[in-house]
Length: 483
View 1 (cartoon, rainbow, N blue to C red):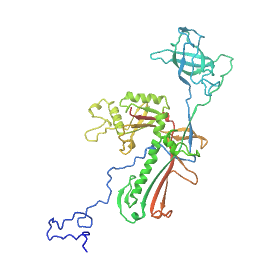
View 2: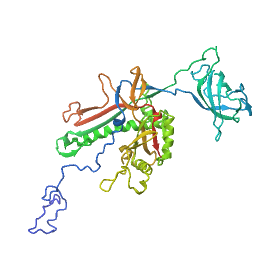
View 3: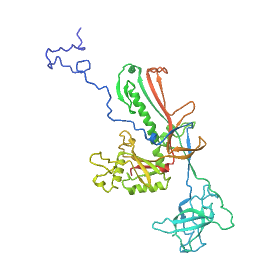
View 4: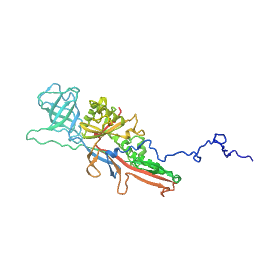
């Protein structure tokens, strides 16, 4: 019988430290004398990797026991129509004297009761009529003499002795500023109901899991770390569990920011739907979605001049006029704003007094601003989420550069409480009851690490939350995105 070639013979050591064919070891392992120097502390090459904190800064969390959240937001108090039609059949060109009628058609006609889906103009009210034609300076004031709710038309008599009629056809703006009645007449006809808007959102279920086998748990290997919350210490195999937990906590926030409802014909709607109809189409209304749908959007890139911000301020004037607002920005937008504010300083071009205007050669030059006031107070803060390379940082398509959030709280009617309640403009509602709290659930399953729940030779750490974000008064928010 022949001797097998493998396993082969051992290498023959040499009496001298020279590389010979007989003593050259090609596969290096840690059992020889050349042991590596090791660092037992993990190096934090990416610093604090967590991106959550936005909702913790501007919002709050509160429980809900339903799979649908509804709230009412107040409508406008005063009445203004901006697209009133006036055609040749309603008026003649030339000069109108007192008592002549102008009959414009107002959007919303079709019912017979004011405030019930029809027009909200009533007989006896005084109105201002403004021509929408570019370059026109024509306006008139009149009293409403008759209203046809079915047709959506009104008749008016002018206060001016000589009133120039707008060219026909044209569009007008009509708004109510008061009322006037003759002596001894009856009171106002009809009444108005409050114009409330009902909004809703549904919570979504967010899950994650970490798994380690029982065999790996028996091989103890410690590593020293500094966690994202600043704690120092040693972790064994739970280092990956720690990262899973941090990742899940980030998703609790980013899901609230990015969530969108599934369109009725989408694949997601089919995926999340069921025959019983107990679940909706899937998805939820995140902050970006809501602001993009019923808030304000600046779509021309970053506002880099005061004139750009003036257009934003003028839009805020038309909304809730919230006094204090916080801008959460990516890095480039923050720099653009610093440059814009520095340019307002007459010495800013030379960079000699930029930021803190008492800079000298012995102090660090402050090249940034934390806020400014122009009509309203604006405070700015860098939003790590928009800069993070693994999240929204560096995006081209669908890039969002910043978000303006009003500070403080607003009053809404809470259908669960059955009364008005003060709520932050942004807040999270999570599912909870006396027996089940789904704000942040974590539990261990398997047969290792102390768990005795199944025959699986591993330990599974499970994470779950069910929540949604409520964006109240979205008309006071501003989303900044690329053109």
